Image (tube, rainbow, N blue to C red; front, side, top):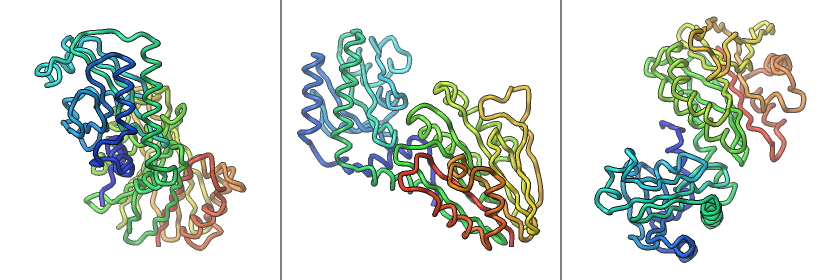
Length: 385
Protein backbone atom coordinates (compact mmCIF):
# COMPACT_ATOMS: atom_id res chain seq x y z
CA UNK A 1 0.00 0.00 0.00
CA UNK A 2 1.39 3.39 -0.95
CA UNK A 3 0.78 6.21 1.52
CA UNK A 4 1.05 9.76 0.20
CA UNK A 5 0.62 12.09 3.13
CA UNK A 6 0.60 15.34 1.21
CA UNK A 7 -2.08 17.94 1.87
CA UNK A 8 -4.35 16.84 -0.99
CA UNK A 9 -4.46 13.19 0.12
CA UNK A 10 -5.05 14.10 3.73
CA UNK A 11 -7.84 16.47 2.72
CA UNK A 12 -9.51 13.80 0.60
CA UNK A 13 -9.28 11.24 3.41
CA UNK A 14 -10.96 13.59 5.89
CA UNK A 15 -13.70 14.55 3.40
CA UNK A 16 -14.45 10.89 2.78
CA UNK A 17 -14.71 10.39 6.54
CA UNK A 18 -17.25 13.23 6.72
CA UNK A 19 -19.60 11.05 4.63
CA UNK A 20 -21.44 14.02 3.07
CA UNK A 21 -20.40 13.66 -0.57
CA UNK A 22 -23.29 12.52 -2.74
CA UNK A 23 -25.78 12.82 0.12
CA UNK A 24 -27.92 15.29 -1.81
CA UNK A 25 -29.25 18.70 -0.68
CA UNK A 26 -29.22 19.28 3.08
CA UNK A 27 -31.06 22.14 4.71
CA UNK A 28 -28.28 22.67 7.28
CA UNK A 29 -25.89 23.60 4.46
CA UNK A 30 -28.45 25.31 2.21
CA UNK A 31 -29.39 27.62 5.06
CA UNK A 32 -25.78 28.81 5.25
CA UNK A 33 -25.44 29.55 1.53
CA UNK A 34 -28.85 31.24 1.51
CA UNK A 35 -27.96 33.51 4.40
CA UNK A 36 -24.56 34.25 2.89
CA UNK A 37 -26.35 35.34 -0.29
CA UNK A 38 -28.61 37.62 1.73
CA UNK A 39 -25.72 39.05 3.76
CA UNK A 40 -23.64 40.07 0.74
CA UNK A 41 -26.27 40.54 -1.95
CA UNK A 42 -24.35 38.45 -4.50
CA UNK A 43 -25.96 36.22 -7.15
CA UNK A 44 -23.77 33.17 -6.42
CA UNK A 45 -22.85 31.55 -3.11
CA UNK A 46 -21.14 28.18 -2.70
CA UNK A 47 -20.14 25.74 0.01
CA UNK A 48 -17.52 23.70 -1.84
CA UNK A 49 -15.43 20.65 -0.91
CA UNK A 50 -12.02 20.23 -2.56
CA UNK A 51 -10.97 16.60 -3.02
CA UNK A 52 -9.25 14.25 -5.47
CA UNK A 53 -8.40 17.10 -7.87
CA UNK A 54 -12.04 18.20 -8.15
CA UNK A 55 -14.23 20.78 -6.47
CA UNK A 56 -17.71 19.56 -5.50
CA UNK A 57 -20.53 21.98 -4.70
CA UNK A 58 -22.06 20.66 -1.48
CA UNK A 59 -24.53 23.56 -1.28
CA UNK A 60 -25.20 26.59 -3.45
CA UNK A 61 -27.44 29.54 -3.97
CA UNK A 62 -27.79 30.33 -7.66
CA UNK A 63 -25.95 27.37 -9.23
CA UNK A 64 -26.17 23.59 -9.73
CA UNK A 65 -26.27 21.54 -6.52
CA UNK A 66 -23.78 18.66 -6.43
CA UNK A 67 -21.82 19.68 -9.53
CA UNK A 68 -18.11 18.87 -9.70
CA UNK A 69 -15.42 20.55 -11.79
CA UNK A 70 -11.65 20.10 -12.06
CA UNK A 71 -9.83 21.84 -9.24
CA UNK A 72 -7.53 23.51 -11.76
CA UNK A 73 -10.53 25.51 -12.99
CA UNK A 74 -11.62 26.77 -9.58
CA UNK A 75 -10.70 29.68 -7.32
CA UNK A 76 -11.48 27.44 -4.34
CA UNK A 77 -8.59 25.08 -5.09
CA UNK A 78 -6.28 27.99 -4.23
CA UNK A 79 -8.32 29.27 -1.28
CA UNK A 80 -8.19 25.90 0.48
CA UNK A 81 -4.38 26.05 0.58
CA UNK A 82 -4.36 29.10 2.86
CA UNK A 83 -5.73 29.66 6.37
CA UNK A 84 -6.98 33.12 5.37
CA UNK A 85 -9.75 34.22 2.97
CA UNK A 86 -8.87 34.98 -0.64
CA UNK A 87 -10.40 37.99 -2.40
CA UNK A 88 -10.19 38.71 -6.14
CA UNK A 89 -11.84 42.08 -6.96
CA UNK A 90 -11.74 41.49 -10.74
CA UNK A 91 -10.77 38.02 -11.95
CA UNK A 92 -10.52 39.16 -15.56
CA UNK A 93 -7.40 41.09 -14.52
CA UNK A 94 -5.87 38.14 -12.66
CA UNK A 95 -3.59 36.00 -14.85
CA UNK A 96 -4.30 32.94 -12.70
CA UNK A 97 -8.02 32.90 -13.50
CA UNK A 98 -8.74 35.09 -16.51
CA UNK A 99 -8.65 32.03 -18.81
CA UNK A 100 -10.89 29.78 -16.71
CA UNK A 101 -14.42 28.89 -17.74
CA UNK A 102 -15.89 30.74 -14.76
CA UNK A 103 -14.42 34.00 -16.04
CA UNK A 104 -14.14 33.53 -19.82
CA UNK A 105 -17.48 31.72 -20.34
CA UNK A 106 -19.69 32.58 -17.35
CA UNK A 107 -18.55 36.18 -16.86
CA UNK A 108 -17.45 35.93 -13.22
CA UNK A 109 -15.45 38.96 -12.11
CA UNK A 110 -15.56 39.07 -8.30
CA UNK A 111 -14.64 36.20 -5.96
CA UNK A 112 -14.19 35.97 -2.20
CA UNK A 113 -13.77 32.69 -0.32
CA UNK A 114 -12.92 31.55 3.20
CA UNK A 115 -11.38 28.11 3.87
CA UNK A 116 -13.25 25.53 5.96
CA UNK A 117 -11.06 23.85 8.56
CA UNK A 118 -11.82 20.67 10.51
CA UNK A 119 -10.88 19.88 14.11
CA UNK A 120 -7.55 18.33 13.15
CA UNK A 121 -6.49 21.42 11.17
CA UNK A 122 -7.25 19.99 7.73
CA UNK A 123 -8.82 22.49 5.32
CA UNK A 124 -11.48 20.63 3.34
CA UNK A 125 -13.26 23.29 1.31
CA UNK A 126 -14.52 26.85 1.13
CA UNK A 127 -17.49 29.10 1.66
CA UNK A 128 -17.36 31.56 -1.21
CA UNK A 129 -19.29 34.27 -3.03
CA UNK A 130 -19.12 35.40 -6.69
CA UNK A 131 -20.48 38.23 -8.79
CA UNK A 132 -20.45 39.27 -12.45
CA UNK A 133 -19.48 42.77 -11.33
CA UNK A 134 -16.10 43.71 -9.86
CA UNK A 135 -16.29 44.72 -6.20
CA UNK A 136 -14.20 45.15 -3.05
CA UNK A 137 -14.42 43.59 0.42
CA UNK A 138 -14.09 45.72 3.55
CA UNK A 139 -12.54 44.45 6.78
CA UNK A 140 -16.05 44.09 8.22
CA UNK A 141 -17.10 42.07 5.16
CA UNK A 142 -14.17 39.69 5.65
CA UNK A 143 -15.01 39.23 9.32
CA UNK A 144 -18.59 38.36 8.38
CA UNK A 145 -17.43 35.86 5.77
CA UNK A 146 -15.13 34.24 8.35
CA UNK A 147 -18.01 33.99 10.83
CA UNK A 148 -20.24 32.32 8.24
CA UNK A 149 -17.39 29.94 7.37
CA UNK A 150 -17.07 28.98 11.07
CA UNK A 151 -20.78 28.14 11.01
CA UNK A 152 -20.21 25.89 7.99
CA UNK A 153 -17.29 24.23 9.77
CA UNK A 154 -19.50 23.42 12.77
CA UNK A 155 -22.15 21.89 10.53
CA UNK A 156 -19.57 19.77 8.74
CA UNK A 157 -18.06 18.80 12.07
CA UNK A 158 -21.36 17.31 13.24
CA UNK A 159 -20.74 14.46 10.81
CA UNK A 160 -17.43 13.46 12.32
CA UNK A 161 -16.21 13.40 15.91
CA UNK A 162 -12.69 13.88 17.18
CA UNK A 163 -12.10 10.15 17.44
CA UNK A 164 -12.92 9.56 13.78
CA UNK A 165 -10.63 12.36 12.65
CA UNK A 166 -7.92 10.87 14.82
CA UNK A 167 -8.42 7.50 13.13
CA UNK A 168 -8.12 9.15 9.71
CA UNK A 169 -4.80 10.64 10.80
CA UNK A 170 -3.62 7.32 12.21
CA UNK A 171 -4.46 5.59 8.92
CA UNK A 172 -1.99 7.88 7.19
CA UNK A 173 0.90 6.72 9.37
CA UNK A 174 3.08 4.37 7.29
CA UNK A 175 2.42 0.66 7.57
CA UNK A 176 4.90 -1.80 9.01
CA UNK A 177 7.62 -3.00 6.64
CA UNK A 178 9.71 -6.17 6.81
CA UNK A 179 13.47 -5.64 6.42
CA UNK A 180 15.59 -8.75 5.73
CA UNK A 181 18.01 -9.42 8.56
CA UNK A 182 16.65 -6.56 10.65
CA UNK A 183 13.82 -5.62 13.00
CA UNK A 184 12.00 -2.32 12.53
CA UNK A 185 9.70 -1.44 15.42
CA UNK A 186 7.79 1.82 15.44
CA UNK A 187 5.43 3.94 17.51
CA UNK A 188 3.50 6.90 16.05
CA UNK A 189 0.85 8.45 18.29
CA UNK A 190 -0.85 11.63 17.11
CA UNK A 191 -2.71 14.13 19.28
CA UNK A 192 -6.22 15.00 18.16
CA UNK A 193 -5.55 18.64 17.36
CA UNK A 194 -2.78 17.76 14.93
CA UNK A 195 0.85 17.86 16.04
CA UNK A 196 3.94 18.42 13.97
CA UNK A 197 5.72 15.05 13.99
CA UNK A 198 7.03 13.68 10.69
CA UNK A 199 7.41 9.91 10.32
CA UNK A 200 8.02 7.64 7.35
CA UNK A 201 9.58 4.25 6.70
CA UNK A 202 9.55 2.35 3.44
CA UNK A 203 11.60 0.10 1.16
CA UNK A 204 12.97 1.57 -2.05
CA UNK A 205 12.96 -0.32 -5.34
CA UNK A 206 16.56 -1.45 -4.72
CA UNK A 207 15.60 -2.98 -1.37
CA UNK A 208 17.15 -0.23 0.75
CA UNK A 209 15.25 0.91 3.83
CA UNK A 210 14.53 4.62 4.16
CA UNK A 211 13.51 5.97 7.58
CA UNK A 212 12.60 9.58 8.29
CA UNK A 213 11.73 11.13 11.65
CA UNK A 214 11.36 14.83 12.30
CA UNK A 215 9.14 17.62 13.45
CA UNK A 216 7.72 21.00 12.51
CA UNK A 217 7.30 23.75 15.09
CA UNK A 218 4.67 26.30 14.09
CA UNK A 219 1.86 28.28 15.62
CA UNK A 220 -1.52 26.60 16.16
CA UNK A 221 -2.61 23.85 13.80
CA UNK A 222 -0.18 24.80 11.06
CA UNK A 223 2.43 22.37 12.42
CA UNK A 224 0.33 19.32 11.49
CA UNK A 225 -0.34 20.58 7.98
CA UNK A 226 3.32 21.41 7.40
CA UNK A 227 4.37 18.02 8.78
CA UNK A 228 2.14 16.41 6.15
CA UNK A 229 3.80 18.53 3.48
CA UNK A 230 7.27 17.50 4.65
CA UNK A 231 6.39 13.81 4.68
CA UNK A 232 4.89 14.02 1.22
CA UNK A 233 8.13 15.56 -0.02
CA UNK A 234 10.09 12.75 1.68
CA UNK A 235 7.98 10.04 0.06
CA UNK A 236 8.49 11.58 -3.37
CA UNK A 237 12.26 11.19 -2.95
CA UNK A 238 12.46 7.56 -1.86
CA UNK A 239 14.48 6.63 -4.94
CA UNK A 240 16.79 9.66 -4.68
CA UNK A 241 20.36 9.52 -3.34
CA UNK A 242 20.48 10.72 0.25
CA UNK A 243 22.39 14.03 -0.21
CA UNK A 244 20.20 15.01 -3.16
CA UNK A 245 17.02 13.94 -1.35
CA UNK A 246 17.56 16.27 1.60
CA UNK A 247 18.62 19.17 -0.62
CA UNK A 248 15.65 18.76 -2.95
CA UNK A 249 13.23 18.41 -0.07
CA UNK A 250 14.58 21.55 1.55
CA UNK A 251 14.22 23.56 -1.64
CA UNK A 252 10.61 22.40 -1.98
CA UNK A 253 9.36 23.06 1.53
CA UNK A 254 11.39 26.08 2.70
CA UNK A 255 8.92 28.60 1.18
CA UNK A 256 6.04 26.99 3.10
CA UNK A 257 8.04 26.95 6.33
CA UNK A 258 9.05 30.57 5.89
CA UNK A 259 5.49 31.68 5.14
CA UNK A 260 4.28 30.08 8.38
CA UNK A 261 7.28 31.33 10.38
CA UNK A 262 7.98 27.66 11.14
CA UNK A 263 11.10 25.58 11.74
CA UNK A 264 11.49 21.97 10.62
CA UNK A 265 13.97 19.32 11.77
CA UNK A 266 14.64 15.99 10.10
CA UNK A 267 16.66 12.79 10.58
CA UNK A 268 16.74 10.72 7.41
CA UNK A 269 18.61 7.44 6.94
CA UNK A 270 19.19 4.86 4.25
CA UNK A 271 20.07 1.28 5.25
CA UNK A 272 21.51 -1.37 2.94
CA UNK A 273 20.01 -4.52 4.51
CA UNK A 274 22.60 -6.83 2.92
CA UNK A 275 25.58 -5.10 4.54
CA UNK A 276 24.11 -3.14 7.44
CA UNK A 277 25.66 0.03 6.04
CA UNK A 278 23.78 3.17 7.08
CA UNK A 279 23.97 6.67 5.68
CA UNK A 280 22.10 9.45 7.43
CA UNK A 281 21.54 13.16 7.33
CA UNK A 282 20.48 15.19 10.34
CA UNK A 283 18.91 18.59 9.70
CA UNK A 284 18.85 20.01 13.20
CA UNK A 285 17.00 17.04 14.71
CA UNK A 286 19.61 15.53 17.05
CA UNK A 287 17.36 12.87 18.58
CA UNK A 288 19.00 9.62 17.50
CA UNK A 289 21.14 7.22 19.52
CA UNK A 290 23.10 4.14 18.45
CA UNK A 291 23.24 1.35 21.06
CA UNK A 292 25.87 -1.29 20.31
CA UNK A 293 25.49 -4.97 21.20
CA UNK A 294 27.85 -4.53 24.16
CA UNK A 295 25.59 -1.85 25.70
CA UNK A 296 27.74 1.15 24.80
CA UNK A 297 25.97 4.03 23.09
CA UNK A 298 26.53 7.32 21.33
CA UNK A 299 24.28 10.06 20.06
CA UNK A 300 24.12 10.51 16.29
CA UNK A 301 23.95 14.04 14.99
CA UNK A 302 25.63 16.48 12.67
CA UNK A 303 26.32 20.20 12.70
CA UNK A 304 23.71 20.82 10.00
CA UNK A 305 21.01 23.37 10.81
CA UNK A 306 17.22 22.79 10.68
CA UNK A 307 15.36 22.87 7.38
CA UNK A 308 15.26 26.31 5.86
CA UNK A 309 18.04 27.70 8.08
CA UNK A 310 21.08 26.12 6.40
CA UNK A 311 22.86 28.69 4.17
CA UNK A 312 22.71 27.70 0.51
CA UNK A 313 26.50 27.96 0.35
CA UNK A 314 26.88 25.24 2.99
CA UNK A 315 26.11 21.73 1.67
CA UNK A 316 24.43 19.12 3.83
CA UNK A 317 26.89 16.60 5.32
CA UNK A 318 25.71 12.96 5.34
CA UNK A 319 27.32 10.61 7.89
CA UNK A 320 27.86 6.85 7.56
CA UNK A 321 28.32 3.90 9.92
CA UNK A 322 27.75 0.14 9.92
CA UNK A 323 25.04 -1.54 11.95
CA UNK A 324 26.47 -4.80 13.34
CA UNK A 325 24.63 -7.83 14.66
CA UNK A 326 22.95 -6.97 17.97
CA UNK A 327 23.17 -3.21 17.43
CA UNK A 328 20.09 -1.01 17.64
CA UNK A 329 19.42 2.51 16.45
CA UNK A 330 16.66 4.53 18.13
CA UNK A 331 15.27 7.75 16.63
CA UNK A 332 12.55 9.75 18.33
CA UNK A 333 10.79 13.10 18.48
CA UNK A 334 10.58 15.52 21.40
CA UNK A 335 7.33 13.93 22.57
CA UNK A 336 9.26 10.84 23.68
CA UNK A 337 11.72 12.86 25.76
CA UNK A 338 8.80 14.62 27.47
CA UNK A 339 7.67 11.33 29.02
CA UNK A 340 8.30 10.41 32.63
CA UNK A 341 11.74 8.83 33.01
CA UNK A 342 12.86 9.66 29.46
CA UNK A 343 14.13 13.22 29.73
CA UNK A 344 17.42 12.70 27.87
CA UNK A 345 18.82 10.60 25.05
CA UNK A 346 20.91 8.76 27.67
CA UNK A 347 17.64 7.60 29.28
CA UNK A 348 16.40 6.30 25.94
CA UNK A 349 19.72 4.57 25.29
CA UNK A 350 19.53 2.86 28.69
CA UNK A 351 16.01 1.66 27.94
CA UNK A 352 17.05 0.29 24.54
CA UNK A 353 20.01 -1.53 26.11
CA UNK A 354 17.87 -2.98 28.90
CA UNK A 355 15.10 -4.47 26.75
CA UNK A 356 15.54 -7.73 24.81
CA UNK A 357 13.88 -6.49 21.60
CA UNK A 358 12.97 -3.30 19.80
CA UNK A 359 9.32 -4.28 20.15
CA UNK A 360 9.74 -4.37 23.93
CA UNK A 361 11.27 -0.88 23.84
CA UNK A 362 8.29 0.43 21.88
CA UNK A 363 5.81 -1.11 24.32
CA UNK A 364 7.66 0.34 27.31
CA UNK A 365 7.46 3.80 25.76
CA UNK A 366 3.81 3.34 24.77
CA UNK A 367 2.96 2.54 28.38
CA UNK A 368 4.49 5.85 29.49
CA UNK A 369 2.27 7.98 27.23
CA UNK A 370 -0.51 9.55 29.32
CA UNK A 371 -4.11 9.68 28.14
CA UNK A 372 -4.71 12.90 26.24
CA UNK A 373 -0.98 13.57 25.73
CA UNK A 374 -0.25 17.12 24.63
CA UNK A 375 2.45 16.12 22.15
CA UNK A 376 2.82 13.73 19.24
CA UNK A 377 4.99 10.74 20.14
CA UNK A 378 7.17 9.06 17.49
CA UNK A 379 9.80 6.38 18.05
CA UNK A 380 11.65 4.13 15.60
CA UNK A 381 13.93 1.31 16.75
CA UNK A 382 16.02 -0.38 14.04
CA UNK A 383 18.04 -3.46 15.01
CA UNK A 384 20.18 -5.99 13.13
CA UNK A 385 19.89 -9.70 13.86
